[in-house]
Image (cartoon, rainbow, N blue to C red):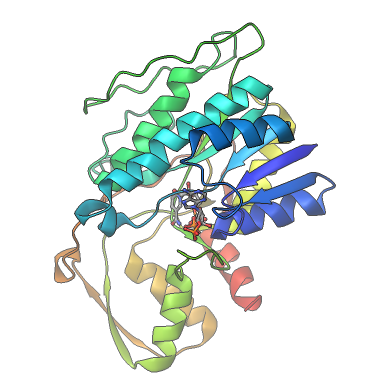
Length: 312
Ligand SMILES: NC(=O)c1ccc[n+]([C@@H]2O[C@H](COP(=O)([O-])OP(=O)(O)OC[C@H]3O[C@@H](n4cnc5c(N)ncnc54)[C@H](OP(=O)(O)O)[C@@H]3O)[C@@H](O)[C@H]2O)c1
């Protein structure tokens, strides 16, 4: 199957390219230099010329604090408007559109976690931009598609959107995959930054003692596992809709770091602290574990982390 991966030089994008090419698919990987996804005309032109069967969007604006202070507009351009164009381009060429969103679309006060059916309530600019991307896909979906999802009820006003004019053939089939706390080999694009595991390993080699936030419970997710889960979802032909895909289990940042140091045999004294010890511009959810209610959870985050660490 011809698969177009956008954001192919990002952390998840690289894992997706490997997963699909190793399983016999024809993979075309584009990043910002190949196609800036905010360029509407070029998006429609290039995707039309390529005519892939599946379009997977792993491109995103991911700088949570910078979105809050200075890049809010850019975050919305990349995470919402561009997503809508990609969905539109997918519908026009009849491609399945797979896109990723985040646990941060939820408020974060539900200790037991959030299912696919729970109503989002994003708190930060980044989270609102990702939520608007979700909303735009759901606004565009094909009326004939099988989906048990209602457009999520929102507590925030979302600008009403003109619907894309659809001919009979222009129906969007989509998978909206929410995930959390990705780890794996860092992206190689210009904007790439190290993930939490790599940052901890560096700090662990440099320092004897660290303060870590013992709050904000969510599920670390290995990009290799998420890429495989994405391929399996696409190949399964499951109904279009929202899917939560994360490694099983959840932890605070402190608990995650503790496991990283234990598995890497780094002797660092860790002090659990409250989040307000490190004030950050954007609010984070306190509890944002994603419940995978439609499909089984992936293996535990601890097992996946152990596997990632041996690849380093
Ligand atoms: N990382 C997490 O913990 C996490 C958690 C929950 C959900 N997610 C979601 O998972 C998906 C993958 O995240 P990730 O961490 O793999 O992202 P990433 O490593 O930051 O990669 C994103 C890629 O998108 C590219 N990109 C950005 N703007 C673009 C544009 N205008 N046109 C074309 N390409 C552009 C970037 O290129 P440059 O490097 O050149 O900017 C980069 O290669 C995203 O949807 C993200 O929101 C991530």
